[in-house]
Image (cartoon, rainbow, N blue to C red; front, side):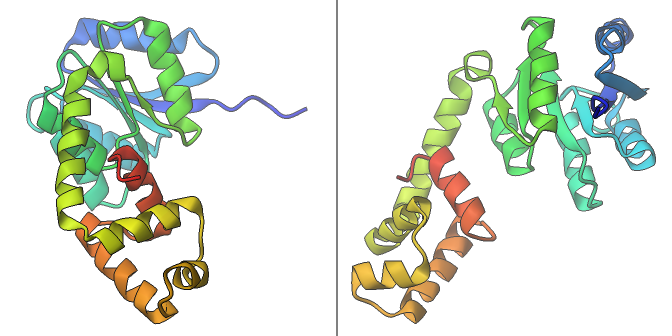
Length: 214
């Protein structure tokens, strides 16, 4: 019989009462283990480096180093812990920057506690939990704005190739359909990757869907 997976979590929030509540919430579920709790972003980064947790739950508004700064520091240090933002307010620019930095979960503090638990489990499993009705129209506006920029930067041929990549077509299939050489397809893809700041086909497909480029 396979033992259930315990998700190891670091908590970061500068309000002690709220931090106590989070620890109690997760501690009451056998599926979680709180390995550290911190009250500022700098401590959160060090706790992640020390304990290598599965998930960091972090507030955005914290002293010393804010949540975005902490997430950026984790990325710069090559720490692979997945991140969930749990905060009272989310500004448009913060949402977009968090997503750019690889954040997979965003939950507002006003939401039901069970949603945080569901979010952590989803993110731990490799999924994404962006509470669109919680984050509100801010995320939609930012994604639409990014979509508009991407549409402006891509040529018609490049946009066509993006759609084919999302469909799962290989370079040869794309070349055959467009009556061009595979080398030309590769040249277009190189330009597309550079414009959209992605590293490969999988990330291109994800960004295309998120930004409405299909």
